[in-house]
Image 1 (cartoon, rainbow, N blue to C red):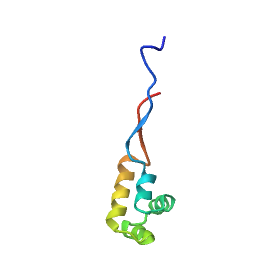
Image 2 (image 1 turned 120 degrees about the vertical axis):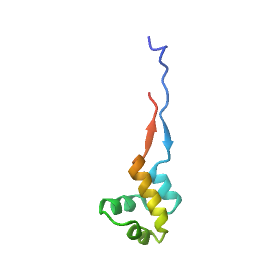
Image 3 (image 1 turned 180 degrees about the horizontal axis):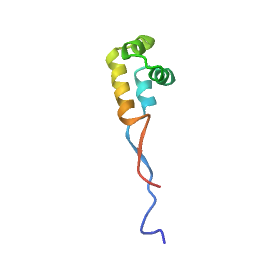
Image 4 (image 1 turned 30 degrees about the vertical axis):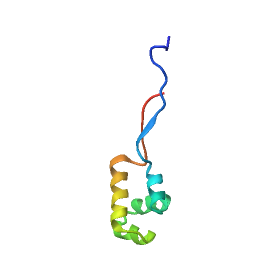
Length: 74
């Protein structure tokens, strides 16, 4: 009955935002809080002692893809 439609495992086509934050030593939860509080990239960068460009990249990823991008089917 279901032989014509085999089960497939979902996959990510973009990295999870939490993984990206971890790679640049940015606390994911605090980063999300900063976004929720409508802080600027500069303010968030200062919180983590990192470059504003790093935060800008993380923000753009969040705005374009969310926290994760899972595709596929079961």
